[in-house]
Image 1: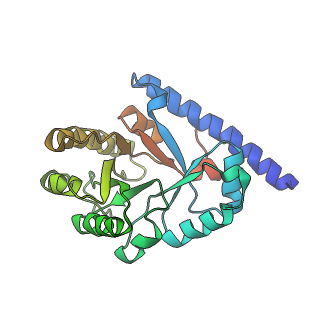
Image 2 (image 1 turned 30 degrees about the vertical axis):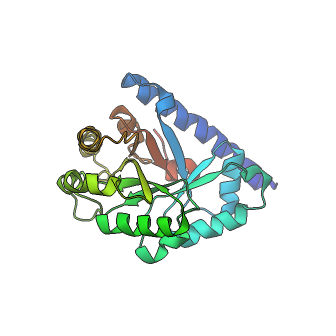
Amino acid sequence: MTRDQDSYEAFLRERRETIFGMISEAARRAGRDASEVEAIAVSKTVDANAVLLAIRAGWARFGENRPQELGRKLGALAGAPEAAGTCFDMIGNLQKNKINQVIGRVRLIHSISSEHLAEAVSTRCEARGIVADVLLEANVSGEASKSGFSPDDLRERAEAIVALRGISVRGLMTMAPAHDADAARRTFSGLRELADDLRARTGCALETLSCGMSDDFGIAVEEGSTLVRLGRCVFDPGYNLD
């Protein structure tokens, strides 16, 4: 390992400790146990070497938003002893023609944004004799720029989706408006309330609420997130966590 790599690994380790301390404090404020919250390191902007250093620094779960980059990272890490037990989630928009590049290779797909996509993933998984764990993406904020089901559409279609045999719906995912703490809190609390409603309608546990990123993960934890997706605050030494 070069001196620069050693320095970056030390930064990643220290930053990870800071992040988990912040998660613990946010959980304490909400009367939650920090063990209820998982953090994944979103590695979409860094190379495989940075991921390897992050693994050495203690990270074991990563998120990618492009199937091609997922494949490159998995290939690059395949021979590394340190990467044993490491897993990736698919967090970005998933096109139907890229489904086969993702299923069977990731722990969780966060971005099932339509019934048609859910059906397509299910069909491909059934053909291969596997079941994919997925989250349903909800556009809680109502922003036109964001993909996902509207809450009303999800209430209407959830029972049909959870009945699909090739997928297992583990929970919900959303994204909040950027740079607006109040809107983020409304979005995350809205996701929690939507999950409560869908549990009653479907009987599914929906144990995973994937919400909260670098700028707002503390608020997300306070509002019930069980999985935060962190990129810049993990990998960028210039990112200010204060």
